[in-house]
Image: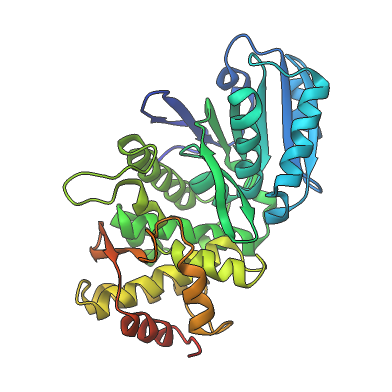
Length: 367
């Protein structure tokens, strides 16, 4: 376990390797992550999140432009992206300049997409301020915006030049947001690192606070899981030896994205992921792939930290139709990332509708 005063550097390997720096009070590492030759920096941040201190620190080294965007998923639209492009154009942004995202996962997704598409790609460094963004959106180079048809259907792969996870920013995070972030952390435990599950199951949930050494270990372990998966399959072309590659990171996301869309993104992403993971565990159990005790462990692990494990906000038909638009689908064939055991993800193509219906009923869903 890392000491509170030290920083942890997790290397994400690949064609363009970069570092993820984790620690308390590590904001001074940002210029080093931006690298040499940068003249202008655009800081993309959501309204209501004070970015003044970050901007002031960067102004000691660069010409800085602040770009304020809407909060949450409402930022992830073509209209907001176009507004950012206009600001960059007016500022004369060139390929030697850089974008810094400062905020949660939606900010990272939108800001990363803007960086990926401006001049066909400029540098971006992510400074996530939520637990969810630290362990999910900031690492891996996926960027995207939403459309009426679904979540993240428009996007690109654009790796950052660095990620700065300053755990001090989590001290002001509402408890509900911190808990929601644990949805992605626990997901990583099921797909790759069962030690995460052991930590969650043996730690009093009240002790999982921003300054908790256990929370830091969970963050570092979840980031390492994502770094390892991304390094092996950057653009989601598939894994080896039966492993689904980067698609494994979408465990629970097929139903999660359907719920988010149905609820007009009023449900937090980590909450939807928790429900989605329990759902696919139930599907895998009914398909004869996953042992009952591992299915039950899904219900227990997510519920232990205060995440939802049931959902009855829409009919099965509504969610089934939304799931078919999932990025993993091929034609009309629904494909789900499932487990055959702990840390053994695989893809179930064309799951039986009876199994899907029964799994939805098992999490309290309406028929």
